[in-house]
Length: 338
Image (cartoon, rainbow, N blue to C red; front, side):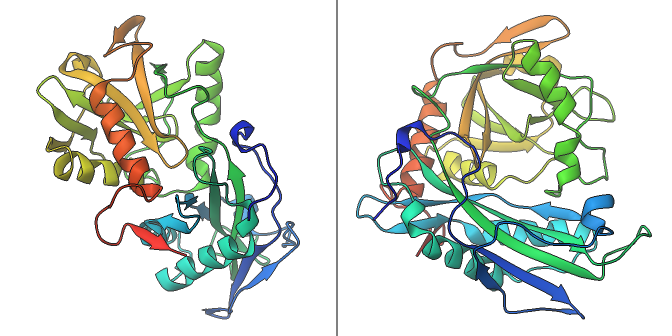
């Protein structure tokens, strides 16, 4: 059974659900973790997560299939990425088994919040970790909290998947050899001003170029970029400061093995947009956001259409969502049944 929500009208806003998972790392080890009702965390005023940004997070979804069963999509990949983020900022890793178990516990405890199949809504899970304890100096914390909470979210595209326009920004999201490849909060704090500026100018979001030369596309807002060339090659940027998206990784595989496209991870020059007939942004929240046009230095480049989704982008979207919802058979290990 599901809660009595108007699922089709849900947005991407916080909704308090019944239980969340909390585990504490102290004296060199994790405790067993437990489900709690309280959605507030009590921490030291000197926590490194508050002062020095020693924190990271993940985002994944639970889906209800046509039979009413619930499944996760590639949670092991989220666990691995969180481990890499922890390594970068000197936090203890959450073992993959513990990570997945925490997600499963939270989904089961809040099963009534998992939207019904066919509504376009899903249950979004937010695992996160941060440094706690009394630490004033710039150094790793003595204790850490790992938490997973969830909330139902609506379909990202209201009224269908429609292309949106983006503009390049002079601001940088992450520097080479910085924390761009880690999913840490500082990367998102660094994007808030540029995002605000782009939206006020009438765009959906901004496109970040490489910090070193400002000649190559790196990320689109908080999502990964991809393009389909005029000779049907699926291309996505490669850089040490790009977050390795799980949706992007999945699309690379599907493009090659399901759509029989050639795939490339390489530099994407902002002055070379003519090579693409379709482009998009991809990530957990939106799955795929089609890009209608990109503006750079006062010039606007239109791709397939500003009003209609390109055929290859649509096929990629339908294939990925079909696997996530259990309508299509995906590669082995992609779907985790609860």
